Amino acid sequence: MSQYMEFPPVSDKQLGFYIDSSRCSGCKACQVACKDKNNLEPGRRFRRVYEVNGGGFTPTGSGGLENNVYAYTLSISCNHCADPICTKNCPTTAMHKRPGDGIVRVDTNKCIGCGYCAWSCPYGAPQFDKEAGQMSKCDFCVDLQAKGEDPICVATCPLGAIKFGPIDELRKQYGTLCDVQGLPDSAITHPNLVVKPHQGAEKGSN
Image (cartoon, rainbow, N blue to C red):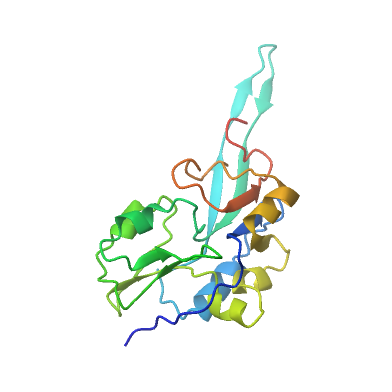
C-alpha cells in the first residue's frame, strides 16, 4: 500500500537548510533521529554525517612548513534543489518538486523503483527502499511541519548546527556559501543550502 500522503505547502517560499559545520561535533544525533523517525533499516539514510579531511604541510620557502590540514564533519540530506536532476530523470514523474515550498518528494503511487533519480543526484539523496521496491528520500518532514513542528534533524541537533526556513531569508542572514570541500559543485543542481564552513572547508582554501 502506498505510504505517500499529500500535505499542503508549509510555505509560499522555497525552503532550505542552513548547516553550521563549524559547530557540528559529528555526534550524528540528526542522522539517528532521522532514521528512527522514518523507520529506516540499516544502510538507508536520509540524512548523513560525513567526515571530511585532507590537506597537508606546504613548504614555506624559508625552511618551514605551513600547516593546511583540515578535518571536519558535515551533515547533509536532500537539498531540495532549485534545479533538481532527480526530477528531470524520473520517467514516471514520481520524483517531483511541489509548488510553494519547493520540497522534492517521491510519489509512491507512481514510483517504479528504477533508480534513475539515485544515479542522477550528486548528493546521494534518493535511497532505495528494498521492502517497498521503490525510492525514498528526505521529504523535509512535511508531516511535522504541517503540525507546526521543526524537521526532526533541526529539533534534535544538540548544538543548533542545523536550521531551516525560506532559503532567501537564510541567505540574507547567513550568506550564500554552499560550495565547500566534500560537496559537489553547486552549479550542477543549485541546492537550497547554506553552509558555514569549518576551518579549512572552503574550496580553494587549501
